[in-house]
Image (cartoon, rainbow, N blue to C red; front, side, top):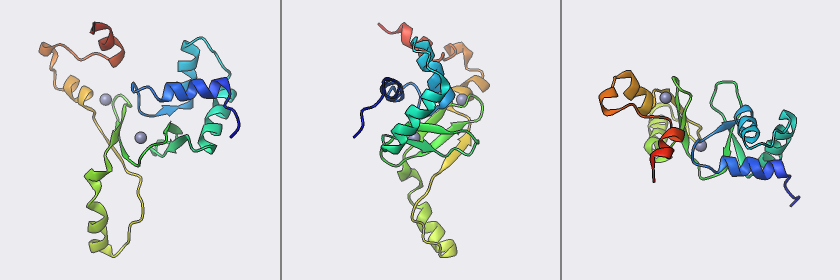
Length: 148
Ligand SMILES: [Zn+2]
Ligand SMILES: [Zn+2]
């Protein structure tokens, strides 16, 4: 296996952080720049392509015309917030009986799926319902500072 470039190592480290579920190339570039690496966008692209070729990273089809990437893991589906763009993994067991219902409905034998559900995430739903008396929930980055 060829050695990964420094940028590829950094990209993988960023993508393994739990702060975000999927990354676009722009978001990876921003994070790398914040770390003081300031790579040119084409080297970020090459690094991600290399990780994708080796199967370490996969592209997530979210249907918004942009390429989103995540670290390869067990199959799961996705929830996308149309307000803040936040993406969350969705355990596939939730849609497990869909295949048998499709079979019963049309005779179609489902062999795979990529499901993306769009809507409003918990944080945006709270904001919309004005739960400010409990204190507005802050972004995870700010909330992290309050601990210990
Ligand atoms: Zn949201
Ligand atoms: Zn995912």
